[in-house]
Length: 92
Image (cartoon, rainbow, N blue to C red; front, side, top):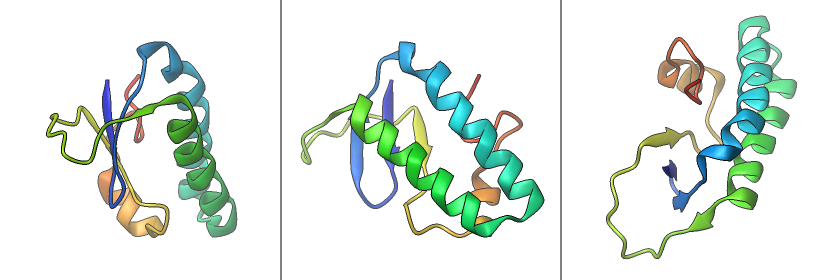
């Protein structure tokens, strides 16, 4: 799956990594619902770091359609809330 981190670029991520990412996504959703901004910020950074770690960066000139778009590391609670689906940021 091609994943875009807003403001950074795209990575190719194997579907097998999504169970691990969904745990962080669930934590992020809970922290958003409770309004715990410091915990939200830590978990958002952990999620994006994990995507960067597990994914293979695509070249800057690649124009692949992104199947998943994640917020930038400096996104606010409200900005991320606007991006959420019923499953959170990560489907499944």
